[in-house]
Amino acid sequence: MVEKRTGILPTIVVTEIVRYVSDKRGREEATIRCLSLKRSGLTIADLTAEIAREAGLLKSIHPNIPTGDCIIASTALAKKAKVLSDDHHYDEIKGISRTWF
Image 1 (tube, rainbow, N blue to C red):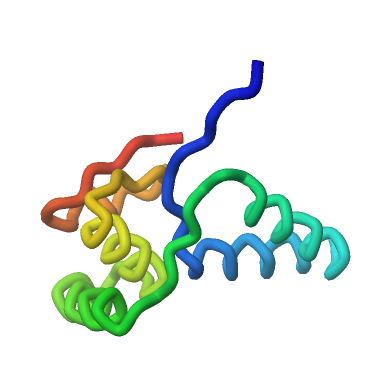
Image 2: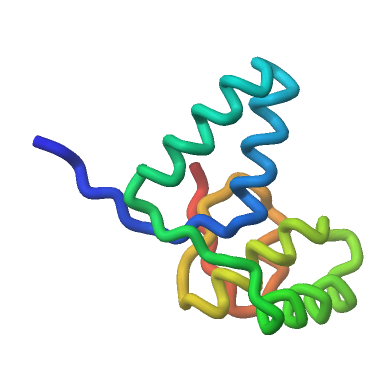
């Protein structure tokens, strides 16, 4: 039985994963991981102008939260999705529901 994967993957997360894997295991492994993400069944959410604007507004309210995480939060808010993360700073953002992993 194949488990159905659902969820949203912001493009900034793809960037972060590729950079991390490339640093640890090299460019070829990073490329393979990127292809796996594309084929995972998750919806890859582009960074739109609206999400970028909202991320900038979140960053101004929460200056200690990294910009990438503000983009993730803004994507979650726009898509009415939960954030899957162990970063507690998401709990500071109004409207964000975080699930620990």
